[in-house]
Image (cartoon, rainbow, N blue to C red; front, side):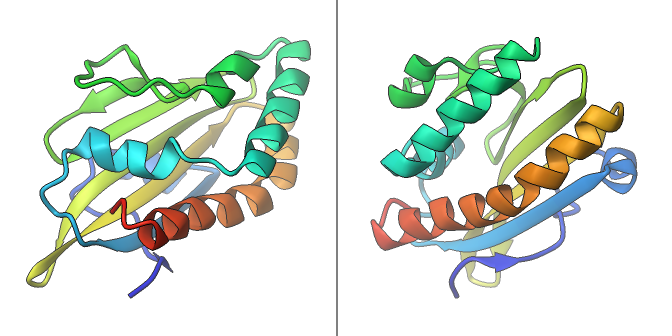
Length: 173
């Protein structure tokens, strides 16, 4: 099995209410060859290894977002992802603050004027094996949020799948 689209898992701490009322949601599943990895290591295996072209796109997007008064990661945060041995709620993992943290799931994200989003990375049983599911939900606050998602969603869908596939190919998962 490679990276496949799926539903947001019922075992996620993302509330059913938030998932159902989200303007946008998606989820992708991939097998874990290293089921013993800590959830923070799985998160880093996926999101701390952006190809250069993706980093450059993120820097441009974040610069435009910051000019519009939105909270966005800096270029240095994108170019040099800090990986720690231990994380706590409220700290950043990668470029996003952590909202929830357990042995099997990290939920990070950001709240902004135009939308709030949450990114869940969850280890799930998959028969005799273990998989990881990366889920994203976005709650839109205004027309700017809808316009933003209109332009970003195609890149998001491709990008998340690409990052997960790259992590599989590099045997980080």
